[in-house]
Length: 213
Image (tube, rainbow, N blue to C red; front, side):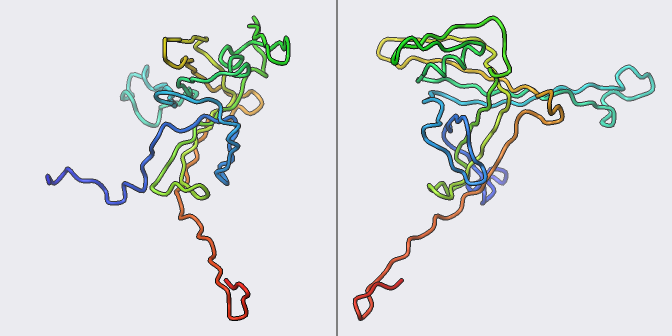
């Protein structure tokens, strides 16, 4: 094998795999979540992006070299989460429309009514959680979790329906800063290495017929 065609022997411990799931709430300290809180069945890729621009404060100073690192000023982060859902509920359609309300016509019929104004209650949190490391058991599996805060659908609502295929509903959520806590960047990332799953104790009967560990 060529000298520079090699991998770090521990790389398999730090790989991610599968598309992950989109959740409304997640507890990274324990890795637990309610399956009923999985927001959608999705198809294709689930994507996260976080970017921010830099302003060169020395760009117009004659005797300053361009792009000096000491004079770079970071602008606000722009974070977004996108993918394609193949399941929708009334609550999901409201979220995809962003500023809309749900009217309950009957126990089985609901109407989603777009609204002209935007309310603070239209913003929400979302989590993208996916497998990490080679240990992915039910109790102690490794994961990477991306939490976006104060998110809002920004690309409008659309759906594609084809014969003999699932309907597809693209989503794109952008995270926004909160004026009540302007220093907090509206996304965070958790990473947890997997651990071996606990083994069950095997009990055997003793001479008196009683079980012992």
